[in-house]
Amino acid sequence: MENPRNLGLGGSLPVPNVQALAADVTPTLLRRYLRPQPSTDGVFPTAADGEAGLPVVDLGRLLDPGLAGQEEAAKLRLACEDWGFFQVVNHGIAEETMEEMKRDLVGFFHLPLAEKTKLAQQKDYIEGYGQAFVSSEEQTLDWSDMYFLNTQPPSYRDLRFWPSSPSSFRLSMERYSAETQRVATHLLRAMARNLDVQDDEKLTRIAAAQSMRMNYYPPCPPEERDRVLGVSPHSDAVGLTLLLQVTPVPGLQINKGGGWVPVDPIPGALVANVGDVIEVLTNGRYKSIEHRVVVNARQERVSIAAFHNATFGPSSMYSPLEEIVGGGEPLYRTITVEDYVKLVLSSKLQGKNILDAMKLPNHPAAPLIN
Ligand code: OGA
Ligand code: NI
Image (cartoon, rainbow, N blue to C red; front, top):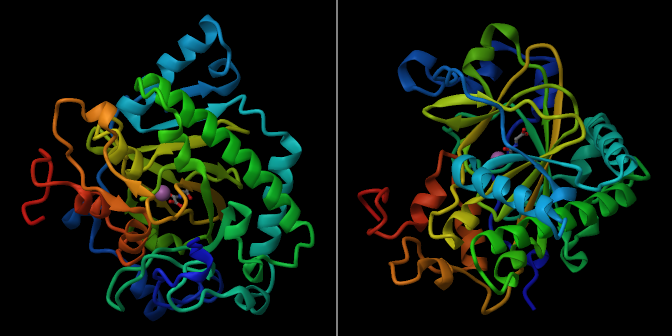
């Protein structure tokens, strides 16, 4: 049985450690992080005015078999169709589980650099401490460090990359991982119902594999903060993402109505977003929305994105679901999970480029060369 732990599916070029750089930055070092002037490249358009906040889905209500459940399912449907992003409250994850995960992740990022680099990424693998999506020496870099772990199923874990300090990290991660996987599965089951997909396994299977992208954003020199991004605009090339803001510092923004709308997480909530794979499975009915992270001049920011995907296997595929395509035409390619992961890991993080590569020529928004 294929296991991503043992497959060199692709990695990232090594880049400077941003946390160390931020502590002692020079204009020369900063240059690789500067984007063209905001006014000329459209990277920083102003936020759309008057957008209400993200939709909120109450998971406890969603699981209610009665009317409350139906009402909440309608909210979920709207959130998936109109926003691609929503907050999940009343998710049932114990506060202790969340707090222990937060404490141990901040503890990890605060270890001396030499400790963390013991877990550095290796060539052609994404797991470990480093960065993702760097494919050329010329590309503008993101103002963040990343620590990436495969967490589910347990057989996908490579414990060589799990830290021994903080000593409770492994246990905290194990608990947090199981709980976020449970939440993701519930949300996908409810989506299947909303989409009239009878066999809900066709959606819940994309929560069978989980990996955690843990992000550390150091404060950025104030004079350059308008030309630096924590994470470039991108959509998540996964099934479903559940994001936890570990520190109460804002930064995440989503592209809505042509502008960037800041996400202001409700304390204790998870921010969910539809990934590219759900857009493919739903043949475009649910949209995977572009988002980015802006930097903060004074405070460090930490977040964890729990990415959910299907497991590997010779017949494990991503393709538009027949129930949704119906008599129409599929607008996205069919691809094995393994080839999809290879495509993702060899790409640069740039807008919806990965999803564009999945669009068939008959998709109304397909790029000209496909
Ligand atoms: C990501 C991401 C947002 C954040 O890791 O894919 O979009 O707030 N993170 O850190
Ligand atoms: Ni993302």
